[in-house]
Amino acid sequence: MALTKRRDELVSARRAAGFTQESFAAALSVDRSTVGRWESWENEPLPYLWPKMAKLLEISTAELRAFISPRGRNSAAPELEPAFGWLDRRAGWNAGTSRRRAAVAAPAAAGRVGRSEAAGKLMRYYGKPPAGYRYYGAKVGDVEVATSIFGRESWLEGAFPLTAEHDRLKLRPGANQSERPFDENAAVERLAAVAAGEVRIADIPLYRLVDIEFGADGVRGAVTTESFVEYALGVDLLEGELSGSHATPLRDTYLPDLAHVLDVDRRFCAGGVLALTAIARPADPFRGGRDYVLLVQERSARVVNGAGRLAVIPKAFHRPLADHRADARIGATLRRELEEELFGRVDVDNTAGPQRVADPMHPTRLSEPMRWLSEQPGRLRMECTGFGFNLVSGNYEFASLVVIDDEEFWPRFGGAVEANWEAAGLRLYSTLDDELISELVTDELWSNEGLFAFLQGIRRLREIGGDRVSLPPVELHG
Picture 1 (cartoon, helix red, strand yellow):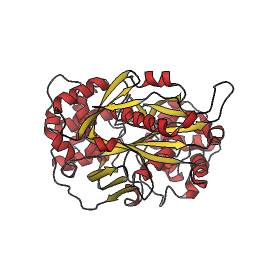
Picture 2 (cartoon, one colour; picture 1 turned 90 degrees about the horizontal axis):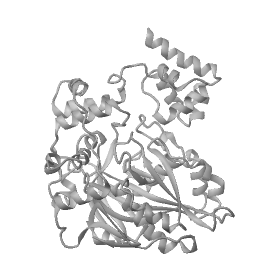
Picture 3 (tube, helix red, strand yellow; picture 1 turned 60 degrees about the horizontal axis):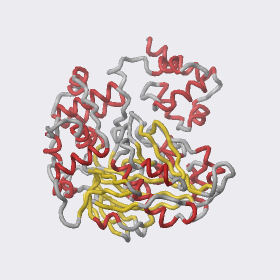
Picture 4 (tube, helix red, strand yellow; picture 1 turned 60 degrees about the vertical axis):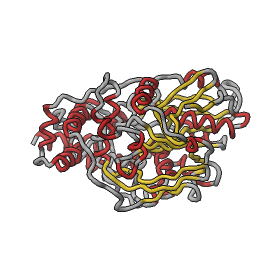
């Protein structure tokens, strides 16, 4: 009865503020059915929506939380039920066992080391790379930086546009999905930590890499789909071991040597697409000459990957949205993430619930900035600038560059560019400020993959940016 009463209070607050479900959904840029699920307690709004909802309803955030989530901490995670269910099935436990164990387990320690220390530990663990391969490092001006990115030397040279001619990853249904090693206790500890915080683990598909050919003329390869939950409760736990002194039981099991890193067909190799975004700005009497503005994010504590670190934006797991075959292309993830992470499209975030729209990226559903960019060829340029494996968890990483050359974009839409819940903050840098950018690359808060994409993007902008750029030289080594 009490639960029904609090749910009714939410409905009453919405009506008192003059909103129907449809108009409330429109004000929040979500689907009407999403509001219906909140009001029936099927799920809760994403954390970044709470302040805006409270403002629209003219109530405090605390009052709104009482309406929507009056349950206790461990019972207040219905969105984790798929993860608990998956673990029960994977471990062969009776239903509910993983939730009960997580309720009494000590949460996994959130260990974190700086980028340089992590890279150094991993280089010592794996030793000298085989011929033709390298650990990704660079000299930026007078400063040398190292990362945990590993791959062929040829994967780092040149750039190609993310068009159908060059972007040729394909879906391979029924690819090898043999039983992989799994640590049940580590998974329970991870879920205990997630239930105690606001980290989002959704039961959605990820693209797992099973074959790759990468060169200056483009990318070919194959992906299959597997559970994000298995990634989050498996290889993603490897990062925590880096904060310890010596013991590496999970790494010894999952990625014991570089041969296992490269054998993507036989392991869980998830990964992502991340891009340095560069937007042209006209000359300004207060700021100075014409340049590109570069976007860098500070990752939120609520994300599974790279929490609390610096990264380029957008940064996303490569995953399907609605069309599993078409979405296998790198550019599909990049366009979706521009909409979600920078242009405010909440309905393309399938971590919040099932995808109900047949074509989420249909031209009629695009945000105003993306629609404007799509109206004329050449307004939006997307290039892949490199590829490598991140030894932190074995992820594959497609470094990319997004360039908007039309100076009209920033005066028209710059005020609408806003990071979503995955970022705790957004930083802007000018491509004319080589001194500040040289300092930025030494920041130990960078994620390894974030710095990889940033440096590859800087290298490319020096080639194509003309008088808009005054960037430090980036000389690769490793």
